[in-house]
Image (tube, rainbow, N blue to C red; front, side, top):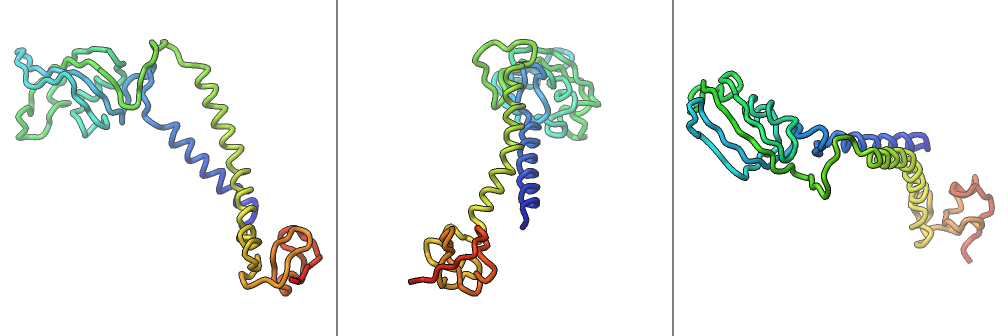
Length: 212
């Protein structure tokens, strides 16, 4: 495996890692609740005549997605902020559309308050605008990761290739893996005499030192 290929592979690994983390569904005080969030909320559901059909003061909705919960509920909860309350009406077409469900074909009215979002804790009041300092540090960290990953990966490959670091300690030829006949007089890596004919593969020196 050549140097260029090692560098490309390391770059792709770190880039994939950064992209996956940048797409995480972490709550933002600016964007509010998003698809995929796990939210804690208090809610009450009533019919148009005011009759309560469901309520919970500390419910947890995991992985907020269309298909996991009725469409009208998800649509109205998206974008809500922690501490925000909202009352909204869900028409039958966006409610329980499966025939046989006890709430099928009914207009539902929900009052919802967002109590929290998993993975988010607020140590201080959130400003209405983005945290420029935090975003700057994030960008710097990403750039540093992209630059350093290929370098670290290549250095690691150079360090461990052919197991020469280990072989140097156990007197095993760094090329063929057999018992070595001697070492390179320059770098000290062990080799068989036959594998040293064209010089040391590690440091390219030409002086072979036989075992005494």
